[in-house]
Length: 111
Length: 115
Image 1 (tube, each protein chain N blue to C red):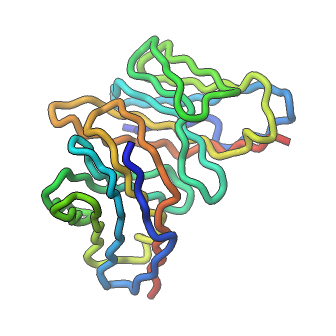
Image 2 (tube, rainbow over the protein chains, first blue to last red; image 1 turned 45 degrees about the vertical axis):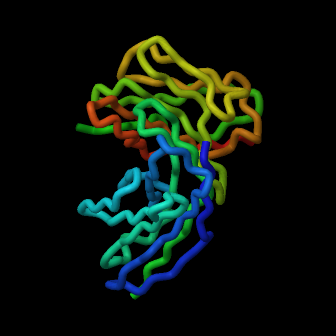
């Protein structure tokens, strides 16, 4: 399984874009990049996933570099409710495959 | 839909006691998982199930047993609790679809303390 590296913490001002980086230099060709977040010790919540193209949904955007060795999760207009631990996970695009969580990035959004 | 629910929400055990954590999902998902999360750490997989009647070991299975007698329920048992099993336990479920997405839905967690 490809490992991921994330900064332990980041700060962001409310209303600004939050850009969370993730390094996954050992990713294999059939592995996807997934992002989950965990708010205040609740169960993790799925955010977005991608293979090699940039992806966007109602929650966030995912930018994956052309060589797929790194990616950035973008929260375009961060709010206080986006304060959470964000996990970047590289896994097979296959239901039933367990997720492997690292320590993630703690994002603190302040007013 | 209630999604994924976990029972109980909190529990305190003494060393050597046994207990069962219940996870239930009403989304008709095939796959279910048990994770544990220790303070300041990410989640680690204990056991998982790819269908009714089938279970498999995850990263940290020692000291735990599981059963999936019904599709909607996944039970996690501790036969003889140890202080090292003090943790927050999360259950999750996921489904198979034509898109193959690996999106897991998590329950609210059970906070277990073993004295």
